[in-house]
Image (cartoon, rainbow, N blue to C red; front, side, top):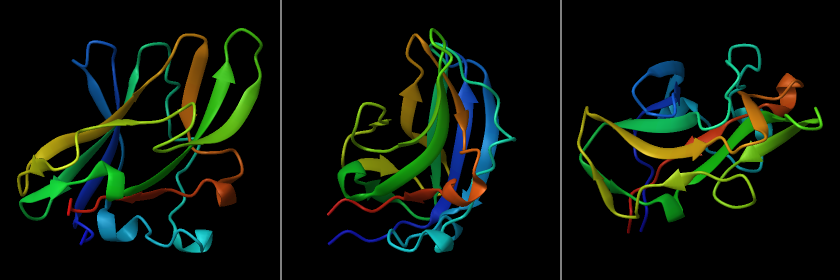
Length: 153
């Protein structure tokens, strides 16, 4: 049975070569919210703190696990609010990155080992051509984040 893995979650921007990293948000996993039905129990991801992600930039999620564990992306939960802008039309839309849909994260394989107290990239989203992205939604109440890594059964 999958169990929630404690640790620190980091959201960062990386350049297309993954050489430069800017930490955008960090929180203990226990504070990230675990209630999928009650949005008020999930923390707000501020819209104004984010740089604009451009073509080929990476939005990454890393985990510093409290204990050695094998993490399963397929049993974990993620909902990351973002604002996207179509660079061709100028249309701006609030949406959510997760496991499924057109805009989704790529995660490490189920059962990937995480060593205690060591940062390891858990997932990433590379910005496609024609889009720009910013963390959070303009309406802060709807800009709630849910990231809960679970151990792989």
